[in-house]
Amino acid sequence: MLVGKRLGLPPRRPLTPRWLAMVRLQLSLQLDYEVYGPGCDFVFNIHAAHTARQRVLHDALTINQNVPSMVETDPATGNRYLRLTAMPGPLSVRYETTVDIDHHFALPADVAEVPVARVPAHVLGYIYPSRYCQSDRLHKFATREFGQRWQGYSRVQSIRDWVLERTLFSSNTSNSQTSALDTLLEQTGVCRDFAHLMIALCRAINIPARFATGIDYGADPVLGPTDFHAYVEVYLGDRWYMFDPSGTAIPMGFVRFGTGRDAADVAFATIFGSVQSAAPIIHIEAVPGGDGQLRVPYHCIEAISTDG
Picture 1 (cartoon, rainbow, N blue to C red):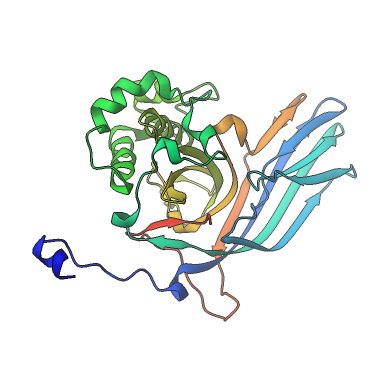
Picture 2 (cartoon, rainbow, N blue to C red):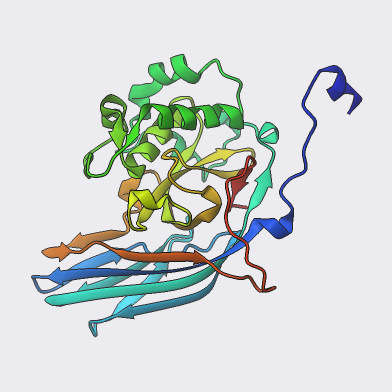
């Protein structure tokens, strides 16, 4: 501590107490479709993922059509996929769950970057370019903007802030073809586009980053009804830390559904056939935990993770 004082370092503050860290969230969602052809196949990624710090207490799935369905878990990512083949006519899929999230907290100054030589094998895939995150084409730009900054959590936070400051959140300004390069040029988009741009910039300077999807508690109601949310997880130290480059939600309130290289890996619904869809109906709330205490997600200054 004396060395810290001589160097003029700020005093270390205690982490958020553990009893404040765990939150219990309850959510429901309903997806409605009109199926026009026989044998229309659906792959949904709408189930809460099982992670080291996200515990699924309750799951309930209701499908209005009497058709076989199955839920499979990807052992590598923990993503859970619902698969079914629908018949012509209305299709309604309703999912409800309750999860306990016991966040890992760390002081940002203690979270370091991982040299490429020490990146674990299962993380390496998230350092390469992907369909929507053309990090190879952003290498010179990212190196110029962020290459000389102090390495660690603060450099990743600066990338997140840069994306937020230079990109306008606006609905219906992008489509399924919009990539990180498009968002950099157009400077507008939705949460998916913010995430792709941040991921591409991180990878461009050799920081592993991945695309995460789920439902977010605490989004600004001005943005409209609760919807699916995309955010970013970056591998620092020995785990994946969460960042919200769109700035529209509270990271402590994210319920994770899936993670992948980009949106192509974790669409909430992939449909093979002729279908018309309606807007999803989603509700999420914080509820009392097992001890009867209600803990509501809030913005914090610590680095937070639901991994490891």
